[in-house]
Length: 345
Image (cartoon, rainbow, N blue to C red; front, side):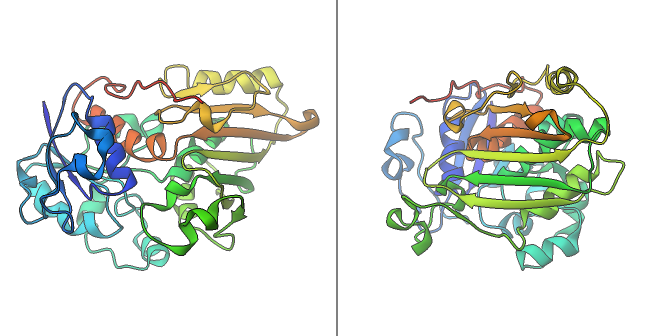
């Protein structure tokens, strides 16, 4: 059994980790930290876990995290970098669901997140945790920076085209929408039901922190400089993410060959479903699952290819992907504990 600690277990990504790991056949949750909820049984905060998770939250100084095999950080940015060196020295692997170990460019991290990076020696060895594009490195990693939710959809949508070199890498467009849970579990005016229900808005239009993360990763697979125009939107639903991606083709290619390019790229990927050409994937087709679904379009058979990508922002966009990485790091089948069928309706 893999002994698991979770730092920051009271938020949405934390409880999603608990939901997934509660039925994972090789997972043993030994510690969940929360300074405010010290001593409170997890099942009292989250009744959905009654009979599944029987431990209580503990203050960070009481948790025996060094006795774990792996520790997940479901915390604000900056927490993992403060604790990772001590855990690594004790032989504990680290998976961070925040941004501390996602970006290699320290200056860009500090610009977009507004905090100094105090753990660059760990950042140097950290592996970006997108299994479909970085599987081999994840298998041998001690530290994984779990991708952002939006970047997961953009990278898996654009990467087959960039690898093939058949699009203008400098003019990528991503029009993305996320449910409100993507903002986390916190009491803020802009996240109240009466503020988010029955409305729809863009945000971060002048610049969003997921842009440099996505460009840094896409640049690894593109021979040409990558340029990305990314606009996120908040939609009135709890879970779900829909990204509409646009790329300009720079070569002649048939629709059949475009479809084959994506089908071949993901034919062995258990969590990427390439739908028939011209399909319209819905967010509810991935709800509460680790599945990402995508479909290709080519308006008027012109030189623009449109990729529609959907996922659950809390699962494949966060906690499910983190468990996918854990499975790889410990030599398990990648889908262990993650083969949940999406919830519908």
